Length: 173
Image (cartoon, rainbow, N blue to C red; front, side):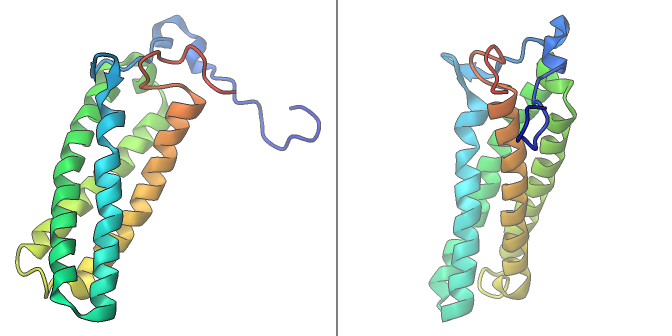
């Protein structure tokens, strides 16, 4: 460790082994990884659902419960697309599959997707009555899960160069 630096060297030792060096995205359109392209929608919609629930709690206006219903449903549906593409990448790319952090990202993301589905299903019983307290609680926990899985996904991309169109040829560190 260099003097004055409190962090250990971030050398990717797994990526140095020949079978695991290839971490390029295999699920892509014209070189653009689909998981990276689709993940932004469920992330943004999860925050929108939380915001709508909080505004419903604050104002009591049914329009916010309606907005939360649609935001949670579309977050779940777009999350299915992002989850499918991410799962395929995890299973077919050896350089991704070998890393424990990729599996941690997968587990947190699947937990999030399950909670998004439960939240939307809960709201199908009545979008206004479903918000307080359980809908707000589920969207709040979903936001925390988005932050956790997003941090792990960012580490995989920016520190290890996984799931990119060029793979881990120039990972940071």
